[in-house]
Amino acid sequence: ASASGAMGLLLPDKVPNITRILPASVSQASITPNGPFVTITGSNLAVNSSTVVTFGGVPSTNVLVVSPEQLSVLVPPSQTTGSVPIVVSTSQGDSTFTGNPANFIYNP
Image 1 (tube, rainbow, N blue to C red):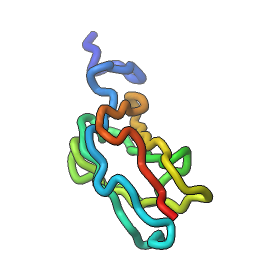
Image 2 (image 1 turned 120 degrees about the vertical axis):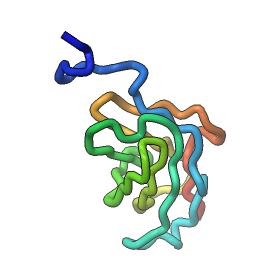
Image 3 (image 1 turned 180 degrees about the vertical axis):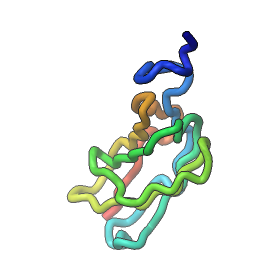
Image 4 (image 1 turned 90 degrees about the horizontal axis):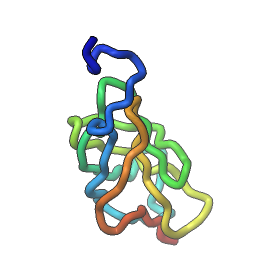
């Protein structure tokens, strides 16, 4: 049996990895139901599954998979300002973030 045919098997080399988020911050006042969007680049951001992106635990309601290496993601509103982690989740696990800065920033 091959590992690729096994259902539910996590493959460490397929776990999402974020390397860059652009822009890395937005003003809370600029957030609407239609934008802004951020571009997330990395690897394994979409692996034969639906991709969920959260900002400080708050899921985005609009995730466009441009490629397995790039997502365009609607920034969800936040109740607080400051730095929050962005996590990309697929059937293979939750992302790591090797970029700089390591978090997304909600500016007042």
